[in-house]
Image 1 (cartoon, each protein chain N blue to C red):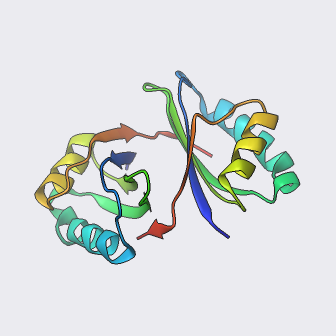
Image 2: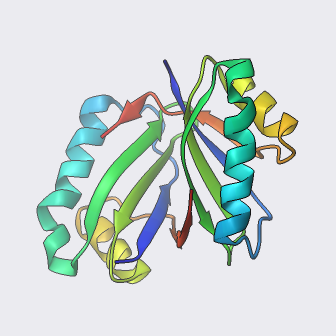
Amino acid sequence: MPEFMDVHRGMHGITPDGLKEAHQADLDIQDQEGVVFKHAWADPDSGLVWCISEAPSAEAVRKVHEASGHPADEVYPVPVQA
Amino acid sequence: MPEFMDVHRGMHGITPDGLKEAHQADLDIQDQEGVVFKHAWADPDSGLVWCISEAPSAEAVRKVHEASGHPADEVYPVPVQA
């Protein structure tokens, strides 16, 4: 299944518990769109959060993030990896 | 050791071999700065590349990427993960 990197902006001050809670909200509903979120990284200072997922499409990733209450600002396919 | 997400822009059309070669160039010299590059993801269409690493500092990540010939446009600490 294709993999995607998505980016959230404006998450300044995000805490470990806050990220865990947001990530769990995605996991709880990801089956609806056939998405598998694998990991999330956050920088509380810049307010940036990145999530890597396997998904049928970028739109599926967007739908899960929107439904769980934290829409992604950008979603990119990452077909090339090393 | 702290982890960092770095971003490269303008890598349009990057191929699997191109990313593998660039990543290997980092791996070959990363010990000089005590950096451990773990994974890289690329989107040839947007030209964006992300690398995750363990490093003593963002400056150490920058130094390795510069010395291997592909400076990072942005380097962020990612102390919060899920």
